[in-house]
Length: 362
Image 1: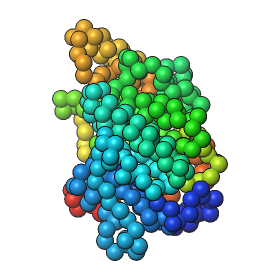
Image 2: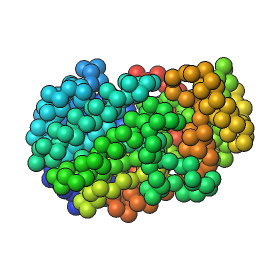
Image 3: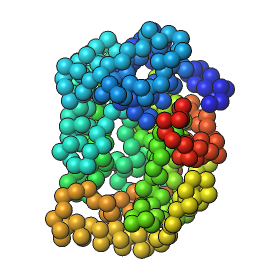
């Protein structure tokens, strides 16, 4: 990371000082352990890292040769347990909630995302020491059905309100998390921010985003075409998340996270094929992709399938209609600027994809 950009982050007025205890849920995850690293670079060492399984501790990667390591607390627990939530929240001033379910059914998401978030919020609302609750959400919450192709998807775009049809389990979980959080707005003791990353990529995440296309039977169906990808390099994303919890004057604000110099889906795929894997790919034109999504909905309904829709018109609208994206609000209010350029981020990503994950030191 570029030291100048990192040092500039510390110039902002923060709502807590470096002696305050911070909780990070999902701290062993792809983004979570980078948020821990970002906070440590900003001088915050009293960190409570909540992980669900002991094996996730190694993902933190900060237990070797790190000054002030005695202030780091690893807590293994499950947010579905009220007792674990109480232990996690106790004595903290700031909460970053990254833990979320990745199950393929709404029943699983109800436990891992919805009930877990409710438990955590209820404990946070009871603790007068908690200054802010920073939720990491997703672009998946947006309702883009009325947003025209080529229009800018920013924080003013409406969020999904209906929860009955069309939402895959992951999107459903993120929408419900945000609804639960906004339900605490009347309680002045619990202030919050929401961060909505676009497509987070980098070392640790080998698979390409579905916004580029889908692998089927040895063939890559390229749906994205000339559409811009809302990419954010994982370390840039983590820096912005850290600031969204710390910076003063942004309570009840939501922030979209994408990097500068976004590239098209076609360019991303071209670079991937040149540097990682020579995929056999077929471009699916926009009208054809829309018809496939329409048929995908019909097939699921006719077959009474209860699994997540692999193709739907909602997904087409969100992923493949062709929107533009803005990071202006995060830059203006948080003072954030991506420290890793698009070229450097893609180079690191390609390098990781060409290595065994065990050989990579993030």
